[in-house]
Length: 326
Ligand code: ACO
Image 1: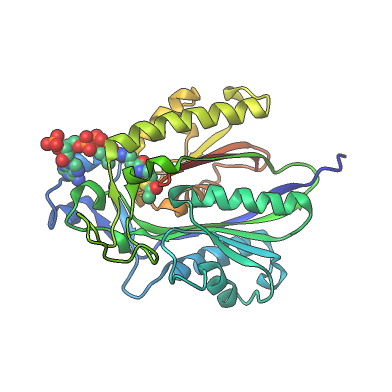
Image 2: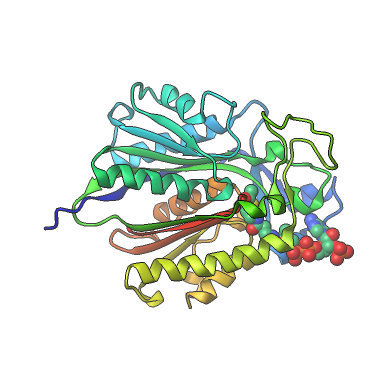
């Protein structure tokens, strides 16, 4: 037995708001069609948070399920990290709100904002805490209400996103767990995918297209995403001395089926070994990877002992991966 401590996923959970918005629903108020959206993105529908339902509400439900699956009580948590770019408030962090709601008072709690890579970033931080022995039971959440910052008249963005949350509980394990994580960012590309308002620049700067909404140069983002993901999956396999054929499952960020296809091809993985939820969830940003993971676990596809590659790409740009033995 080695002395090494791994962070192992002890339980997963997820939550989607009740309301579903189909492509046909969207086509009633914006100039688009089910055919276009499905052909370009693979999305058929997305979930939308109810009025008054917040990111913390979604995170709370996902967390309850993950804690139950892990057999861990909220009072046993040593750390809570929430990946989100749509926090309930500017402060306190959504993680602090969640900590109180769960009744886990006392443990550290903070948010990580890395747009759609938020969960992979949060998981990486949590992994370091567990590996170093600084924390034992860690709750890692990816939760978003992205639909709250969409311009519903902009067909180039409003058709892409949905709301949802996923969570995992990490515990130390001497045998196996997260094998490696790899994070990257390129702040120089910020204007290709951003929401250009905020506390310090002001919420209504005098510039074209300003407002609380996502702006994206879609085809540029697409090209950067495919390239960055190709590179990070190669980096991950190389760091672990593994061949692409060793992987059991690819659990990718769910932004666009064509991006997922491209990564699967790079890995020579048949789509039967790729978890796809984008058709039903749209892009839930930080929520997408843990939502897909939870669905794969609960449906019985992902089994203990299998090798999983998680990856994500988002605004920033940010991108990253996690290789783990489930
Ligand atoms: N319905 C109908 N037509 C549309 C729609 C729509 N919803 N949206 C755009 N179009 C039109 C455009 O106006 C354009 O028309 P034109 O040729 O007359 O000018 C045409 O369709 C093609 O537009 P493109 O933008 O070139 O289409 P593309 O094939 O690139 O698909 C998409 C667009 C789906 C946005 C794609 O580029 C994409 O998925 N990009 C990456 C998104 C992503 O990964 N984001 C990262 C994570 S998000 C985050 O971090 C918050």
